[in-house]
Image 1 (spheres, rainbow, N blue to C red):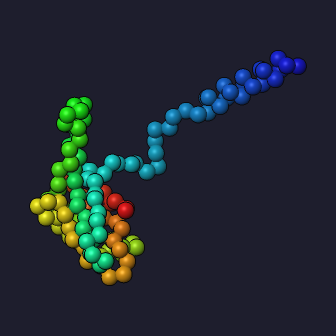
Image 2: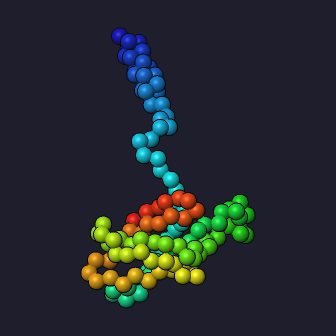
Image 3: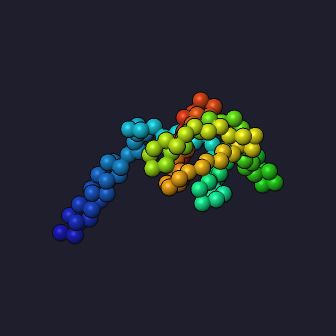
Length: 121
């Protein structure tokens, strides 16, 4: 009787291993954002968002590491609670200053190097 239980358990484990195959086709293709964002509150009605591109060419050299490069002249559409606040262009240091009344902006969308992105903060 014990061997029947052992065979049953082994059979269940084998069937689980067969069913748990890796599925490469996703319903929605995920793409890594080409930029990263850093936000800070300037006043109670202004937020500054700075956009950077990550330079990973020195990732294997601990003396260099990953460098962040500001992204100038980038068109960004800003949203607050799903509603568009406006379209802004980053300055030479990759920053935009957004003035708001009431709801603080929490989403930033744009296109950089042909890749469309939408970042929710």
